[in-house]
Structure formats: C-alpha cells, structure tokens
Image (tube, rainbow, N blue to C red; front, side):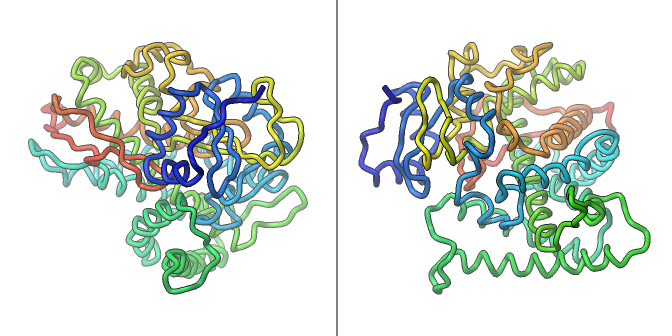
Length: 426
C-alpha cells in the first residue's frame, strides 16, 4: 500500500503550492504524516517526504534513478548552471566548483567578509530600529563579487546595481508555473531575458579581460578559466557565465536572508543573546547558526525526478516519471525528528553534530549546496563581528512572519533590529 494521496482538486493543490506553499505543506504533513502524494504542475505526480530515513533513501539514490527535475532553477540560472545539469555532467561540473570553497582558500575569504561587514556597519543607525535584510544583501553581494572577480571596476559596479533586481525578479518568476518559452509581450520571462542579456554582456567583458591578462588571479573566475574536465576540455564561456550567475545569486541572497533571520531570532531570545554577548563562545555561536537554519530554513524544499526503476521510499517503489519533494522545513519542525521542534534552542547542537538526513538546509546527497562551507563561514564572521561590536536590543515584539521572496523565505519585516555600539568596540 502506497502513501496517502491528497484528494483536493488539482487546481486547489496548485493554488496552495503557489500562494501559501509553506502553510499548505505543513497542513498536509499534520494531516497525512511524513509522506503523501500531490499532483501539481509542473511536476505532476509528486511524493512529498520528510522522514529522515526516507530522505536518506532519496539523497543516496544514483542520478540514473533520481535526477534533477525539470523545470528547475536552470530556467533562471541557465542550462550550463550546476542546477541545470544531471548525471555525469553534474558530477564533472561539481568537481570543478569544489576547490574554490574548501581548504586554505576559505581562510582568505574571512578577512574579506569582515572588511565588507565593517564598511556596511559603519553606516548603520544607532538606537534606532532599521531593517537588516537590505544591508546584509549588500554585504554578501559585495563579498561574493570580490570572491568571484577579485577586483572592482566599472563592470563590478554595474553588476552590483543589476543583480539584486535581477535575482529577486528571477527568484519570484521561477516558482510560477509559467512557460519560459513564450515570447509574447505579456510573458514575464521576456523581461527576465532582458536582464539576462545585460548580465551576459557585462560578464563577457570581464571574461575577455581576464583571459587576456598574462597574470592569472586567484579569484573564482580565474580558477574556472584555468579548470579543465577529465578529457582536458575547458568550460565554455556560456557555461562560465551560467555558473558565475549561480554563485552570485545563490551566494548572496540565501546567506543574507539567514543573517536577517539571525537578528530576528536573537533579539527575541534575551537569555541566549546575553550568553553570546558576555562570552562569545565559538561552539555556542556555531550551535546558534545551526538552530537558526533549522527553525528558519531559507529554502524549504528540494526535489528529484524519478528517472529509473528501483527507487524505494520506505518500502514503496516510486514510479518512473514521478517527482519526489524533500520537505526541509517539514523535517525540521517534526517533533519525532527534533525534540521540542517548535522551540528555538541552540543548546541542542552544542557539542552535537546534526544528523545528516534530519538537518538539511543545504539539501543532501550529490546535489548538496557546493557553497555550504562558504555560507557558514560568512554567517560566522558576520555574526561574530556583529556581536563583538554591537549590542542587540531585545524585543518582546511577536516573531516576524515568513515572507516568500520566490525561492527563498525571509522575515516579513526584513529582520528589524535596534543596535547600540559596544563601548569596547569604540
């Protein structure tokens, strides 16, 4: 016997997924349990799961059995993005992208992150409430731009102005079941393609300049230009542009949004805030970051398309052609997975490594976010510096509501906070 099937009309299921996805899936989880079946465009028959044992079955399945669904973020980021690739192509591309985000290179990024934070924080109002999402976006965008391109210039400044609007528009468009193939005046993808053309022209100029430079830099673009696949072939310019857009988009919005959630959570938990402010213990800081990502995951789902026979979820063989949706938020908020799951309690992770298939804000398996370590470093450096140099004023205001920005979920009031500069930081 298979998992329960949601009996709502297909139109009602579609509206639920488009308009109130998080609440809709939560309500279905509460009613049907950790596995249930939907039928929604563009995925069709979709098995939604949140039990860690089932998630492990999904994430450890080979790409010939469970691959990337179509359409996916490749619509926004390009067919040459790692999000648009599958199977052997995906494996080889991931192999090229891993080196910039591991090893000694990571420590070089720490100083860059702190520098960008201090530059932005010097403009913040003191003893006056302000929203933090926008300034955190500026910090993380500047960090990833510098990490990718190494130095500033006219094209750097053009991208800094262009990308926030481009990424926000594309993120919202991606979750809509609207074809990106139409070219009529009312198709919203037409405007997106105009943004994309501007991005391509700007980055091509940077690529041409970097390729002609006799001294190769140590930025991510230079590494990609020097990289080769197993057969010796280089990445094409198109694929480099797609991959850089992936890093620029995914590398700043999600991290900035998590940081906005961080100040929202900390300002509502004064006892934890005092512990962190009085003695900035690194283990407690890391546990706090883990708990923020558990209770406020920025991306709430990841999916696979069943491409072959042999995928068992539980003891049920999932038919070829189905989609399996991994409920990140559903797993994180399940009391059978995390004790007192609705309680914000970083101590649950002090000295305890989160279970691989229960804590999944970066997804899992071979498609786990390649920039997870970079994101963690960025959050650590920003929060550490923030807590050392500022006092966050506690508030008894209600928690900020979840607000969908398309792919990502942000605090409804954009992470509002009141700060005071610490005397020791003066």
